[in-house]
Length: 404
Image (cartoon, rainbow, N blue to C red):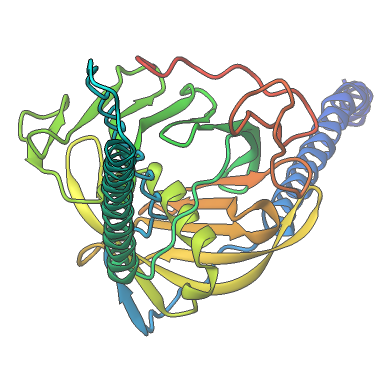
């Protein structure tokens, strides 16, 4: 066979193979286009998430503390109760006038005059005794009142400048964000009846479960006085801290090591309402640079938290901007990289409008006020301080406070 015929046949057969190989190359082009489109969509989504992280509130810049005043825990000022008025002294009962003795003789005019004079003398003596008793009772009442006023004045003079005003009850709802990405709705369940309080903070976390922090106690001369603090993270068992004020000890379920209980000690979340109560009492005291120390108990330890006033800033919420006072926790020890920032808004009755916790690894957990920018109002069907609703929607049920 001639060589040129062989080449022709190979050319014909080669042409069919080129046609068959054109389809795979087209599929590769399609897959490459799809891949580029997916990459582009991911890039756009990443840019959107990055913008959404910084759209509402930027991360606080590194703050260099400049301390101008240091406030330590001390008794808060309380209005003295006026003493009850003393009971009126019993008035002496008048003695019965002596009855004239019957006589069989005829009473003369002289005897009659003597009897009248004796009766008048007896009445005058009784009147003098009654007047003396009334004067003694009045003097005693005046002395008691003066002593009570002096005691009240001395107590008012000895009272410190710190004023204390506990926020009213309310169901506070917050938008929660993890590293700037919107998460589920968290809430703070706060009850204050004037003598006792209860606080339950619920922060939902994806794939882990809700973080629930519970604090309950009463109020004393130092402000809020926690009795029990519990902390449950996800599905783990709750860790409980007991504030035993009889033995002045902090008792932990996580560790057998007890610690001394300081006056005015708080837990990790009651300290937020303690700070709010102090600022509500005297907001002008907390100027930039003022540092207040709190003794704060965790689930296994107790330490001093120095919280500094940074200044007034604008906080952006879903309902608009609101002016708030920024507080930040200074490092508790060398190398402390866990940061806590709190913003209290006067328009909300100095309740927290934003809480931001930054972990050492950079993870941020944020709670931002959700609902109308107004303080909680008292519910009509509630007695006492009431349980107001600070949001537009109904508040979900809170977990049990005894064993969360």
